[in-house]
Image 1 (cartoon, helix red, strand yellow):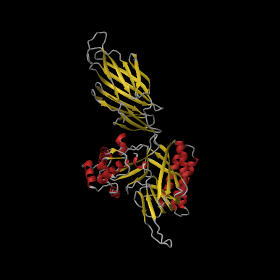
Image 2 (image 1 turned 90 degrees about the horizontal axis):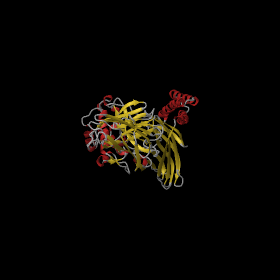
Image 3 (image 1 turned 90 degrees about the vertical axis):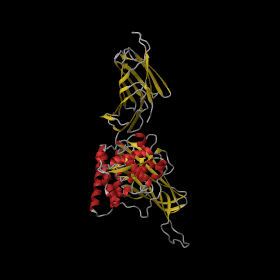
Image 4 (image 1 turned 135 degrees about the vertical axis):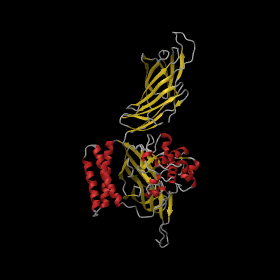
Length: 594
């Protein structure tokens, strides 16, 4: 958060009538409000209203000097009930200085004046996101009623404010933070975020496989999306050739399986997957009274309470830390929030060259998004609260996409709810809320691996790398992508059903085809999207029923592993055949940037 201060200096100008001796001014502000209004071009319109009280027996005039933390300030106007006041402005070191004199203020008079100007370049974000750090001030005198107000773009969603403010209007969305200030006390500013929702994305994944020698029969099994997230809809738009099948795993992650074939040191193989995402704001406004006790967690979720290689749930240090954080709290919401806060308070953000795991990060108190996530999961599980990891991307302007990790807690009565302690460290409340610039690719709770890929092959070792490109698209452009995705998924479902005489699957397939036809004939893009999503969901039900993973042993191992799967005599000279398995998540940026 920007911590620039807006300084007010109050200087006494002695009146000529009646003549006064030098004296101190002991006035104060009965009311002050700074109101920032978002404009269409992301500029800010600032209106400041100040009511100054002169409690003395002297008539005074004030010379005020203020510093605005921007050198791109326009249309400055300052006035009171008698008209415009004369101003002098200058810019230096990225700031604008404004000096002006008030009118004469009589004894015991309440004097109100106004300041209005436009500021460019302070509203950050791109596409659907608008975020602002409204600057604060250090009080040179008392402020009885101090208000900071931010009015966001009409039609947008007021996602958060920090410090926590009151939402006084839903549209246009308006936050108001009120307090009082004593002399020399500081207000650090008001950070706000607004979003237009939903946001549509086109994501392109390009996976390259290379061999150190000669590799034969390579098969790539890669997670491409997760269908379980209620505030997100995602689908495959297209893939490069070689797709053998698709299937959903036990945590609703969709896998695409490619027959890569032979790979040599001189011929790399490339695999491409195009995805469509539609992501909404998730802000259910859950309260502790909405959530049951930890004892109400269903026994079926016991796998999400277990230790794993990166989640040291059974370690005595983690057990003690969980007990210290939660204490005797029995409400699952309150306990999970304490764990969330402890992770933020414990960890100092620092990019790590490798994933460390919960015990290491608790003892060393530093890490990136994987460490925030792993510690939160381990502490939650040690407290009896099911928790699992989420892997995907966080989208920001000029960054395209960044690999990111966060988690979900299971809260009785409310189900799985997201939490992002990494962003909670700097950006406000991300507990049970999520913005539409979080894109989920996979959910992992049955194993602590963050890998997206399995590669099966014979011969020399394979190396893999993945590049990702993410683009925000308009709703009308998304509608056309939805049509392509629905056609792709329906074709896949048809191929899977084949000549099956299963009447249930045949009915589901017919539903998918009917909804696809309706989408293709619709003229309104909202109707296209609605029908295409229905078709895709039906096709995915068939993939869920019929999709199978490739044959072969799976391992929960990160990095390159070679496992001796078959030993036999294939050649007269007794050459052994080795079956290798590689699990690798991709480039390190997917692990450590956030």
